Length: 284
Image (cartoon, rainbow, N blue to C red; front, top):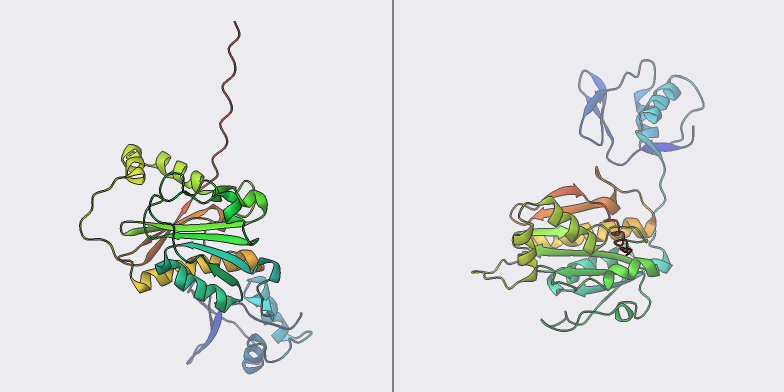
């Protein structure tokens, strides 16, 4: 057995009068039957301080840990690969500022546009989004997405550029799945799926198109912005480094809704929308 230690999220605790117990990554406690194995030696191996033995009772216990998925090879720090470090950030500073700080701390090189586009300004072109050869583009909006604003950005994955975005609708914020290759979920796919999933599709479409009448504005708090920025940074980091995704749904098929009152995150599955076949021509 190679030198191993407990997987992230798995811990072992000594219970007075009952021996050792494992706390799994899911928060469940399981009793460890060590029999004749030396508990101190076991804890030393599980912490990564010493190498695993070749055989014996301690080997048996460690093999049980390994078969249960509670061990991992001693990990090496994962660096952000240089070819994927250039990340272009667009949108509202209340979100791009904390996101830039997260990305820089993780090893990326975020480049923030100096100011968000003015209301009514022309949408970004694909050539403009590809300027300076970014590895990824992230667009954050502190409000609904105007019709057509993200049409050009939806084509970024076809050019080898990762595409990630979030926006707010009242007290709900949406973090859409990262698209990094043709066939991934785009912003247009998300809009189509959301319209198809609600009986209020006419009202939702009208809400997106505007105009909208509102009273006191919703203020995106610093904690809420930090949560959204952290979710975006984690998705981007896992894409860049190839780290495994977390959660119950595949990262590229997962739409997350954040309740800005409670900061509760809800995951919903979302799939690409197939292209509609052209209508056959009528003969005669």
